[in-house]
Length: 112
Image (cartoon, one colour):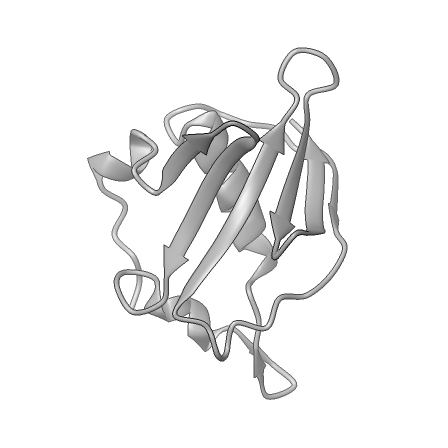
């Protein structure tokens, strides 16, 4: 099962702003079930491309992006989760660095 991208996605429908950045959520029961199919060594892990998609949502899916110095710092086991949430911080204009946090821990970053 593949997620069908809709107009809502292009408008940032999966993201909400907060004082510290953006919160991006993936509901593993409603629309993002396919993420559980990404299994490595018998563990369902959040895919690397998911971090790219998360960054793209913050910028806006209708825009082209180029990621430099893209790094993943740790794998995220999503086997026991119903919703996977990330806090994304984007220093737009100064360093253009984007950091993705899961459960308060830095999990990925890039220069956009």
